[in-house]
Image 1 (tube, helix red, strand yellow):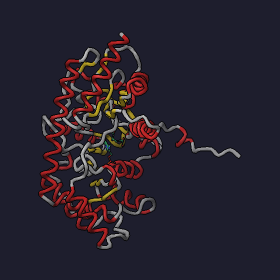
Image 2 (image 1 turned 45 degrees about the horizontal axis):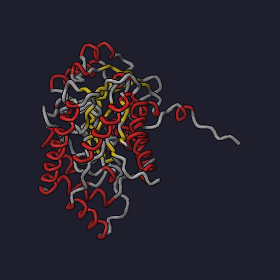
Image 3 (image 1 turned 135 degrees about the vertical axis):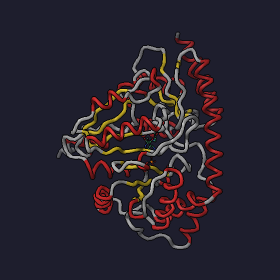
Length: 390
Ligand code: PMP
Ligand code: GLU
């Protein structure tokens, strides 16, 4: 008997970031212990201890039952305060949904809003999961190119030109994964206004909000009502494995998202939410975040220096946020092939730029969320391998 997949599922490509990370884990399991990972977008720090304690204590105290689907009230209250304090967004607890990761918040939003034939506008290169999540919802993507020569900033005329009534959601991801570009207030505002003119929503993915080294973060929901704001704990608090994100959106959209959530995941792990409360509430966590951001800053400087000295990589505009460099390389080969070769030959894991869209071709995404030693070691291996080959 043949078991077929739905067409929707069969046409999906796997997540490049998740796949590479799985390959690395498999290599390590097979005894290849010297792989240097510059691939996955994941903090290199452990979750701050006070956050772990809060979850542990909650677990011991019996916080082991279902929570409201939208999340623990106390947590949602903390999120409201955070949004007001950091983002000038005024909402109340009923305007928040806590999700198992920001990724699921995006999933719920796309599921709730999109129909077959609808389109989601992405600024290319864009994070690997937006388009597949749109496709799962039956929709498609329209990609507006951004270029290294412009610092990967959106071309507003091109955004305007690509905007039509089939575009139901425009994704704005600042700081951007993979380029590290931070968009200024005027740029984001213009995109949101353009969208509003077509009664289109903007999904503002603010997951890297705290990881900004130059420029300032701007949250469009502080001024506009056609915005879905997605954020989470993974990057800021080094909590990727906890699966904690949240979203605020226009009420009718949240209502739809909640129904899908109730019929699928039910709620986020109860005691994990206690950790999230501690993350937002305590000064100790804020100090830990500051130290981690300083750590990324130091690693960023090291990687930028190594790229500058490199015979094979170029980076004309420094990334302003997140924890990625997105250099181009001087070799004439597809990025998928190049990344595969580096993993096989010198055991350095990177993400091929093409995984983020056409404008990513000719680039590699290198995460500097790893130790300085690893960064230096990776560049030594790559440079000496390529020099020998040249
Ligand atoms: N958005 C962007 C741009 C990301 O890089 C990621 C990757 N972690 C996510 C959303 C999802 O994060 P999480 O589900 O871990 O909260
Ligand atoms: N977002 C991270 C990345 O881009 C983690 C993996 C994923 O969820 O895609 O590497």
